[in-house]
Length: 315
Image (cartoon, rainbow, N blue to C red):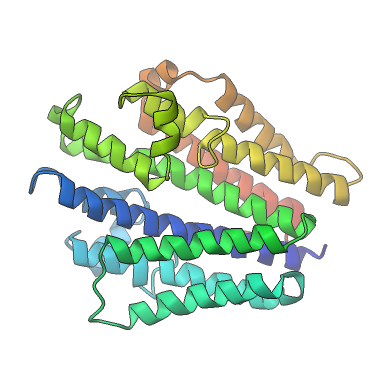
């Protein structure tokens, strides 16, 4: 496969996953506002902080209130990681490799982008949790169409690597949302409010039902283990890294005469660490520090992927 095609497919998939996760963050935050006592915890500042672009936000918007944060994360055309910008970039990448995609997959990307683009221009639109749930449903429809109409060839595997690396990064950032909330409300640890926040984060990754099958109560260690180390839930960090590693192995087999790429080796190292780390170790060293390290490793893996397979680096 040409490096240009591989890169476009990878970023197409990664940007769609990024847009979906933004919608998940916003949807669950809007739900949390309704469920928690008024003015108990500011839910908006942590959403800005986990992007790593809080200085950019402050210069343009100032106060991290609901209106500003929703505009910033969902519809800001100047911000390269907003939902709208991600979907526009995904559609541009899809256009460049249209011959590699099924017609149904391409049409779904186009419809997804147009839905969000139209919403960004509709000032009378009620941007409630239901709206962001609709966006999440568009993303799930895209995933289903792609899975049902694409052969699992090299194109599919590059798309899977993009999707899984982005998902691993964003799942770890969901935990960071809780960390920044703790900085604002340490007195709530172990209370009903704490349980409410953890439940909201499980909902953000559609993991509440899967978690409840194994655990009756919301327990700190069990929730963190579910997010980071669960081997079967499709949004846990471990599962995402394992899936990306499987796809990279298939790509290596097709393109490198069975020689493992540097990217595959890095994925193996991260997967091994996730498989052999325990929650007590994470808490002893600091949850934020651990997930920050995971995010750095995922970023380094993305850079190595560009060096191994693409002509350019990151978007």
